[in-house]
Length: 116
Image 1 (spheres, one colour):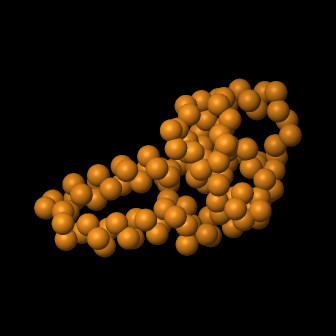
Image 2 (spheres, rainbow, N blue to C red):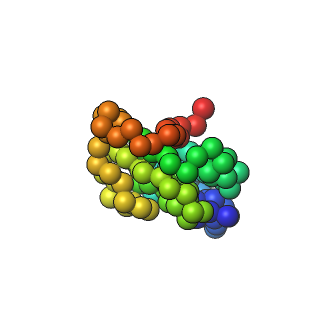
């Protein structure tokens, strides 16, 4: 299990009875976790699928680099890029935007992670 899912489960169980307004409590928790980890909640199946496609990946809009961290932890090669540097990064994130692709033709897979 990854850190995101573990913390989500742990904090939901601990705080569920303390929240006066459960909906507002869950929204607040979600905001905190998005800031700490990522917008989309990764799972093992997603990371495995990414690795099955390529091992030469660039992730644009990586935020904290959490998804890249999970790919790296499983042995993948990924380059996280974001023009806005997060205060808390899980891995080194390159401070650039999509124009990095103009000068770098070395990547064969583009990862854009956004929930649908």
